[in-house]
Image (tube, each protein chain N blue to C red):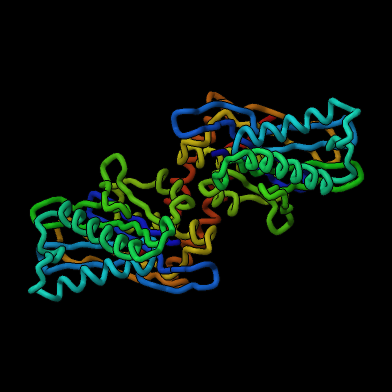
Length: 243
Length: 243
C-alpha cells in the first residue's frame, strides 16, 4: 500500500507521499512516489502514485522519455495548454499501460492497477488538483472537498476532515499532514517513512520547497510524540458521561 | 458495514456497536447487533456481529432457541464451563450456518461471511474477550492488545491506539468509544446511529448497564461537537514547522 495526500489551498498546493512499497509483508522496499516536472516558467506538474509499482514507474518513465525526445509524435505533458489536458493525457497513459500488461495473459482483476494524484498550474490559469483512476477518468478537488487521498486513506482521514482549512498557512498544512501520516504509519505496516513533501506556491510557476522527511527528523519526532500527548489532553478536556 | 468495539478493562468489559445495516447505499436499515445472555449468577455473555445480516441473525436465533428448548441435545451456551468453550461453540455455529448457505448453490466468495466479538465471564474465572472469524477460529484480547474491533475499523482506530488504557474508568471508556464511533460515522455512510452500549462489571455476573445512544442524546452531541474543537486545540498546541 501507500499513502499520499494532495491539498488544494488558497496559497497553492501541498503534496505529501510515503515511500514504502511492499509485495506481501516480507518484500518491503523504499521507492519515491512523488515526481515533479517543470519547464521553467509555464507549467509545474506534481504527480503521486499508488498501486502496482511497475505500472506507476512505467507511467513516470514514459512521461520522462517523451520530454527528452523532442521528435516524438506524442506530446510532452509540459506542452499541453491546461491542467485538464494534462490530467486527460496522464489518465490515457495509465489506461494504455494497464491494458498492455493485462492483455498479456494475466487475468487477476486489479493486479496492474494504479491511482494517481496530479496537481499543478499552467500559466494563465488556476492551480488544479486531480485524482486519476485506473480507468483513466478523474475527479478534481473543489472548495467542498479541497483535499484528495490515495492508498491507505482511512486512518488519516478523520483529522483531515476535522482540521483542514484551505486558508491555513503552509506551515500548519505540513503539520496537519504529518499528524495524518503519523496516525496511518502507527496503524498500518504498509505505509512507512521517509515522507516526501512538495509545497507549490500559487502563481510561482516553479518548483517549490521540496523536502524528504526521515524518521530521525526532529520536527517529525516532535509531532509524532507531541500528538499523542495533545490528543490525550484534548480527550481529557471533554466531560465524562454520568450514568 | 458495521462498527463494533469490545474493550477489556481492569474493571470489566465494555461493548459498543452501531445499528446500521446496508445492502448497497439505498437499502439501509437499523438492526440491533449487540446481544446479551445471562442465567442470573453463573454466566454473562455479550456478542456483537458484523457481516451478512442473515448469517448473524441465524447465529443469534440459534443461540436463543437452544436456550429455550431444554430437551435439545445441543447445549445452551450458558451451560458451558468456560468462556473458551463458549467461543468454540459460537465459532462452530458460525461455520455451520455459513456452510449451510454456501452449499446451496451460491458461489460468491464471502457473501455469507460474518465476524463476531464475544465477551463475558463464567463464575470462577476471569472475564474474557474474543474475536471470532468466519472460519470459526478466534483470537483473544490480551494485555498487549486489550481491545478488539470488527467492521469498519480503520477510521476509529488511531484514537483507540493512542488513548485507550485498561485502567481508565468506565466513564472515560465510554467517552473514548464515542469519539472513535463519531470519527467513523463522520467518514463512512455504512456506520450509523443509534449506538448500543453494554458495560459489564467484573465479577458481577449479571447484566450491566445497557443504553441506546441516539443522535439526539445530549452527551453524544457534546462529544461530537466538542471533539472537533478539542482536536483543533490539540493541533494548534503543536509547534509549526519552520522552513
